[in-house]
Picture (cartoon, rainbow, N blue to C red):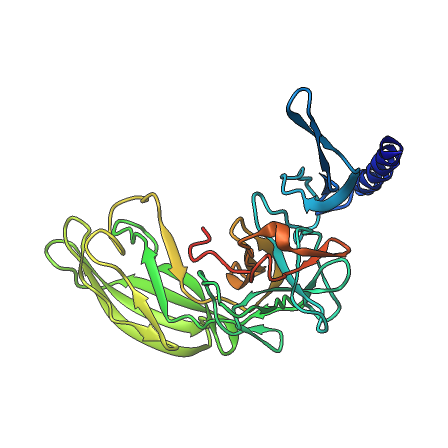
Length: 352
């Protein structure tokens, strides 16, 4: 009878294992699924002694399904067309919140943005992370190149409509050449600047003075803001170059609140015969830009890019770790909650 009951016990126990394996197979294509591994144990056994051989044998009483451990093996990664889809390579968990349950954890990085602009999983749970707090009413209030993790995680907000405000021009810089042997009556350098009016043109007109020094050349410089025929502001100055084309007397021009940086020596404005390679005129203002996309880099930093060339960090996604991942409790939909056995979720102090 004992062997009969042992056989029935083994069949029932193995059926429980088959149920676990079948559920794993059914979820083989489920994103972020963590398989369960059945673990079996023997029931009580009885020690039976043999007097003739002075040995003891264990008489088993059957088996049972003791537990189902979480498989921590790395799953396959698949590329997608969604810039918000993520995958964790190695250990760790994403943190989620649905406003009701305790903090949730998942390996599923199939993410999107809901109608209110928050990052969510497929069950509409909010993804938790560190917000840069630099978005107010759809406007970027501060450009950030770095963002440290915060110990307090909040839902990550990445709105559909986001604007990077214009930054007025404060300086024009140049590396340009004025040809002293040119037959032209005057030579011009122009630059677009950003100001309260939007965009305007600053034009520098160089005219050779009637009386020239014994060596080198001297020029009248007229800076105009706006139209050449009807400028809103005009500033005049003088530029003098040595016989080797080096700027020896630098014009002093600030127009429309914008300072003109002519450089020094041979690094800025020069006066050589003919053309000079590598010429440029730059200004440090930026027009208003609208968001063109979001990207997430390998350390979880969320970066917004804009049509004016700006980019800024707006948030960072942390990876949570546990002293004992096996202690996490599965609650369905690839979601887990922490328990006393798992310990509290924590962040590495140096996640890079």
